[in-house]
Image (cartoon, rainbow, N blue to C red; front, top):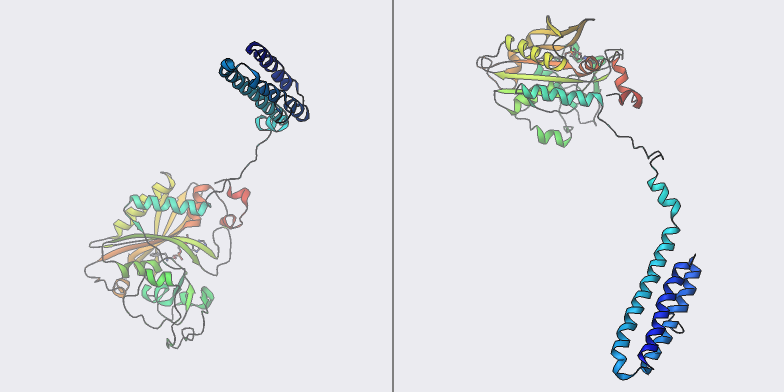
Length: 368
Ligand code: FA5
């Protein structure tokens, strides 16, 4: 066969095959065209290939080269047609992805509870005043909640009606007879964190701590002065819930012990704190009061245009407390305070009733 005849057949295929693939309107038509032109057994390209052997020997390399070029071009045209039909079959999906008017899936972002936010802010403020953060367990024994805080056994603050006492097993510590029996252990995280440095007097039972002042004792047991800590956490009292009370609430305890600490240090620290937490329009006053673990003691009130609010208690650490943790009261003095975090949070955000903070109403909580 003459080379020119062979090339003419190839050119004819190169004209027809891509046109047939391009004209195919669906997958079935495209497949029929594919079989017709490039089918392995009876396709026209195959037939032309067979003619290659009949081309004059001297012309065969040129004929083979051209055959390969045409074959490749036809296969590319087929692949292009496959892709065209595939994308044409997805128009609805493509349009939906790109349609900017369709409302998106709105994911609700969680946020920190306003009490948690307040605690973080308080820690930051007190951190700037040089106080580090200490922590303590919510289940306490009577040593930390009362005795070491100079609250003797017959003190009304220990009344079962004023506290949430716990019956943890029957290890003998709930009998009140001073018999330790098999000691009921505090959760290990607490004992590991706060190894008791010396034996405690009989502690007949456990309770949910009623104040964060417990952490004063734990901190002083672990450190030597100077001590400068705050501790924020939950406390529990069987109080009737109202706009300013809840049976579970949070306190921020502060403690500073060093040589030569005075009441003036306490007052200026709390003034600085109030200014940072509430801006300049807050007024603060200290009313004489009594706490067994401070002497003298004060109530700390703060006021805005609408009147005074009791925010906490404070005072100079009682020498008996310093002695209970092995500090020499002749050498060291200190101040302590305990503020109600719900009341701080409520005032910062204009919340009229702290019970709102515990209803878990997302519409309320997502305002903060
Ligand atoms: C005490 O708890 C002392 N431990 C404070 C203290 C610490 C005094 C260190 C001296 C030295 P008081 O019981 O007053 O004090 O409580 C302190 C604050 O906690 C109150 O002023 C109030 O802001 C808040 N508070 C008390 N009871 C509740 C309650 N049921 N619900 C919400 N907040 C409360």
